[in-house]
Length: 130
Image (cartoon, rainbow, N blue to C red; front, side, top):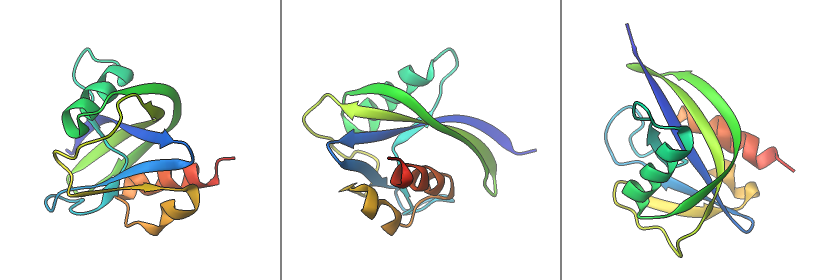
């Protein structure tokens, strides 16, 4: 029986650019790109989890604006229910603490990255959104 994980992702928008982060070199999604976020802890709302994860992983402060998409994806060793939210940045910059690289991309550039399988669906939706 595979473990089921409730996960949130922040689609951080600044002007016409979106933030993407590259995962460390371990696990099923080694060096894949993602919208940053993480696991929802027991008793936590999605918004609380997003704010906590961005503070932990990127030393940033965000505002959560709206839900964009929920994706269920089955990986080799686990299943995730990924809830993606459009966010804006309240702090002046982000500092990588767990990722190896990051980029700010326009909608047209989003699909140029090697995304984690669940995040590619988010990138496709954002790139097509008017």
